[in-house]
Image: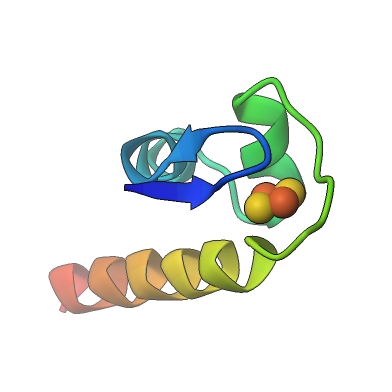
Length: 61
Ligand code: FES
């Protein structure tokens, strides 16, 4: 599934960028060697960042 249609960034690429240390959408774009265009995907990226951070918090408990 695509998260960013403008750049063809898939969900698994976003998750890989987060796993590699991205904490903001700008870092996800950079990891995917792309730039925001319409920025409609930024809300989805932020949601994925929150979900991953929450999952890590639960895993640490
Ligand atoms: S959907 Fe990601 S920049 Fe447009």
